[in-house]
Amino acid sequence: MPKFMFIYHGGKAPESPEAVEKVMAAWQSWLGGIGEGLVDGGNPAGMSSTVFADRVEENGGSNPVSGYTLVDAADKSAAVKIAQGCPILEDGGSVEVAEAMEM
Image (tube, rainbow, N blue to C red):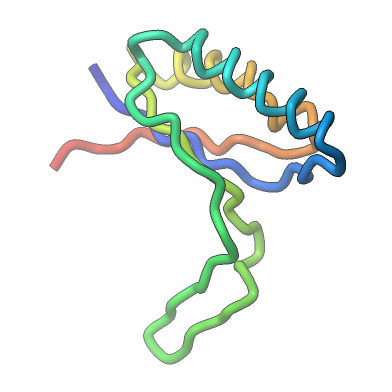
């Protein structure tokens, strides 16, 4: 079965302990709903460095990554359907879905 990367962009950090609990519960529920297709629940990401042949930029790039998850899905359409339930979408973020190609 193909493996897909969910790369998260944007979203906002919860501002209170109650908001943290609510957000964590939403993520746990969504990840739990993926079931056996969940390969790696992932983690949030810190500020990234963008490495070029002639320089390194420390600004996170034009669309900074905020986290990732790996899932197994029958095809890209199935992976997109899973991603459409991601809690980051409720916080103004987005999910980039790409197949992790076997080499």
